[in-house]
Picture 1 (cartoon, rainbow, N blue to C red):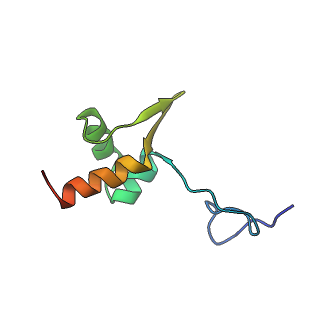
Picture 2 (picture 1 turned 90 degrees about the vertical axis):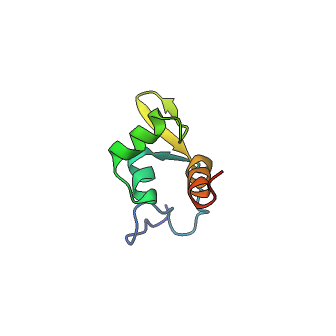
Amino acid sequence: MPRLRTDNPDKAPIGSTPIKKILYSVEDTAAALSMGRTTIFALIEDGQIKSVKIGKRRLVPASEIESYVERLINPA
């Protein structure tokens, strides 16, 4: 069995290929954008960030996070 990393629990075990995340929790999205959960939920409700719901979880595609930042940098 591969040894688990102790420096970051989100990383793959040593010796395995890391998997790129394509969906982020609201909490992870908030952390990535240096915002709070409430702000992310407001952006989702306002249609500025698209999300998907899987079961009870609300998830944000990585592409939506990148698109939102791009729109902030280059407003239309």
